[in-house]
Length: 128
Image (cartoon, rainbow, N blue to C red):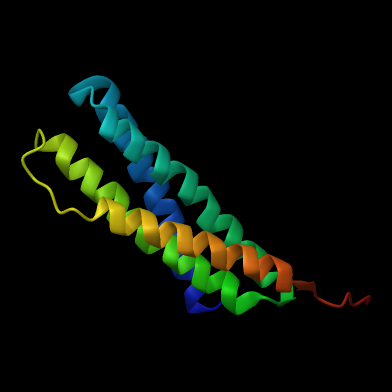
């Protein structure tokens, strides 16, 4: 497995763990809707990063847009959820303003995934 996919799997696992932790904090400590939203985005996109990484290994065409899209999703998730979590945990005092940027990067990432899906061709089967 190449380094790009290993990083996507690592980030998928990390975002999954952070999503569970953020959900627990939102439910038991803070009770903040922004932290709940951050948790959901982390969990959804954690699964997506792992799935896109796996799918990109199984196709001949469309690999570059799939991996580029997954990378944008990883960055956008970090920016979007980081901003929400910091605001929730600091009682709104801290505001990077990166949530809109992160959301825009997420949208672009998903568009790249869509393009990669249109370009994807299955690998030839070998029988041995």
